Length: 116
Length: 246
Length: 138
Image (tube, rainbow over all chains, first blue to last red; front, side, top):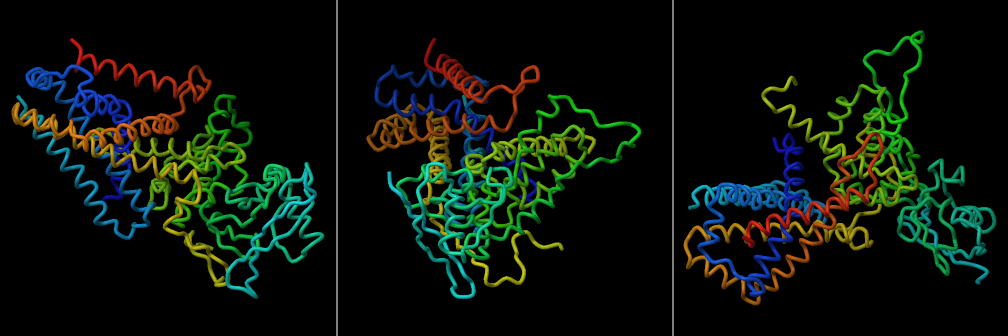
């Protein structure tokens, strides 16, 4: 069944890679470095909540979280197959990689759907 | 400038050894000599027992591919001066079984190439009286790049997936499949797509990109495969949409 | 003759080099490929960090403050610097590779690769600026 889904998994990998390429540099810079190091004004909790509450912002965050997870899962799966010659372990590798991506996606959906 | 350069050649004589060994030869270092000239010099003047393949010596036949200092190279197109002061290490094309010395067996590639049906597939041929198939320069341009392949197999030696998964159809075969898919006279794109969507087909490729780096004819098999993946994904979506006709 | 494309008949004396698990150390091209593929790990980690950020926001100002405090810790800053470098490497290699999947033609002529790459970076800049404005501006 997984073999039938190969084109879809590749497509999710591509979409996730594009999202990560376009948006992650900014997000890592701001959330990971500029805000924690105090180099820009920290948006307060209330302004962040009101920003994220907007349905478009929640949809944006869902895409931002879920697609790169599938990108990472797919790429890491093949890195294990080729880089460490672990293709014989494909059953646990597939379950762990895509399972984690699905779990993260479900969690993102849960938190963002109920956000207020 | 030195008179000679050392060439370290991989020798394998199955009747007397079970593993390849290296043998060093000193060949004249001439400005205009390619690596192939050095190998031919060894065979003609120093050690007639050396076995190797070559033909056109001008980069169009694809026979003389070997590993030179660890990189897949056409030995007729690589010059001794590029590797001075040496030594130059010459080994048979990687990831293929070695029959003897620098000669490898390429049957696996021949089988894979046939699998992708590298010919014009049409449901019905036009009658001769109807004249030739006409093709505009733009239509030719759509596939011309992929038609330049000389089957030298440098791309197979560059591709780590070929080394890890010997059944992978491989860069040249997929590029040649695309050459026909994109040809306006061909009607076999769906047939080839179903063949190349199987386990050993295009989805094994992880876009390392080394195949395009080593290709002496700028075929860009990596690009051909990526375009094919996009086609495959688009086709997949079409087949699952409820309103599709497939 | 129909043979499996990986199997060679009746030739036990042909020498088959074993492919070592360290194949990717044998050339710089291979090493660049593996480093590129390993960016998948920092990308996935940052996705999870963003997920944590959303969860913290949802759970109240104290939870969010704890998130911000952790992100300011030296460990987190070092991690984020590494993630930032990896993400930049991902973006650079992605813009070189992804456009190969589509041949872009304008009025019949193929658009040169460099134009595609440059327009990708311009798009990246525009998208980043727009998001930054919504997030931090106003």
